[in-house]
Image (cartoon, rainbow, N blue to C red):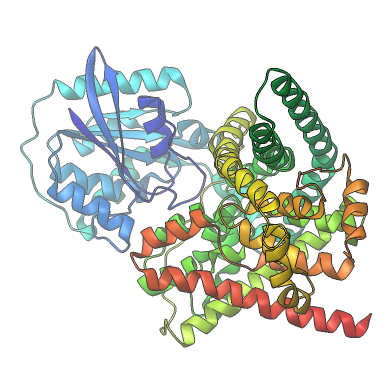
Length: 598
């Protein structure tokens, strides 16, 4: 059979899809995560079935792009059966969609997920009575339990053997609401304690006086733990990889490989890649699990709720806050996530400003600058980095308001925001998701770009222009503009050359500062500080490097994603120049102020 998997947002559809097919669709405890249909297959009793995971929707009356995808597919495509996934904790709302799909499809299986959570919250369900009232089979599961997935496979096998139901009609939303209310009145019993603990937690996390302090505290705590735990492992890993490269180079030279080719491979490709891996991997292995913990806990939609008023003031959509959170991992992912915003105007605003939030490729550079030049205390470093992130959000709001008043005029739209239940995160799942789904993806992209970039860097340091290395000539050309921004030509050139991947910025700077054109990174933070200080770096230089890391052009991957999402070269170019202009102006103003004060 060809089976569609449908349901409200945030009911665990992707988890069910992964459990059945063995695939690895991204999962998360927040609505709007799935923005496109995914396909897979699974076997039940020796029979292979195709499974299509559709974006979440509340009814078959679409109000957003992902809801339109689901509605059009369910109404117009050819499929043999539908599995409707519901959340046992809020069944009445979920059954509205189930009742509508039951009228459209001849074979429907209702999969009531998260039964363990419902039980803990004092919610009791009579699934047999629910099946009788809806006239469709019902199975209650907890998707992360293998035995429950086996029961779901058995239910699919039974569904395949059933005759088609004769009804083929579509209930209106109002009619479906009546069906859901009647069924739940007879089949659902809730304890008074079901909403007690979530209510107390929301008073703290979304309260008028506590919401923003708690947000800043949690963000600062994540950065503190990342900085405190990443420095020493980064130094060890970088030193190990660089030493390994030197050993391999000696072995290869002894074997007779031409010295020039050896230099390209080990002084260019290996050292650049080793630096990227050494700098990026330890922070990622700390930051991503912590951020995933908050995501699984159900905190990210609360962030959207808290920031909604700010984005409404900028005449954009509060859901933009959710795409900002995704941008911390990768801005390209954040741009793709903008599909959850219904209004085309507000979706464009979110796309154009997403790169103002530092991705994982920029965070290590910012952390390094803060640690070396601004403070030696991990607590102080976390505080400064949190303030920088807040500045990035402020610039995002400012530019969103500017776009709303000029190129993308319009009033902010309203939207319905579902606050998902609080869920106890699973440590094993967090580690797997943060390391494999996020860490390996970002690291793989960085290494893929770092290897050819290492060749380019080697060529620029060895190819001369009038007896001057090309890297030096280019940095000298950019030096006047760099000085005006509180930087220098080398730093500005490093940002230009790191456009394929932001992780390349620091390697370019170090290679430019070495007389031999070889990336000779010092063994520890003190050595890095001495190297940069010898080339004129001060606290002012570090401050402006951090600010320009925050506000400059998106990486090449993000720009290509913007081109794909918007289908327009014009908007892609604007996405390049908007943060760049903000970065130039911000650095010039800060440099002028600091020079005057100091």
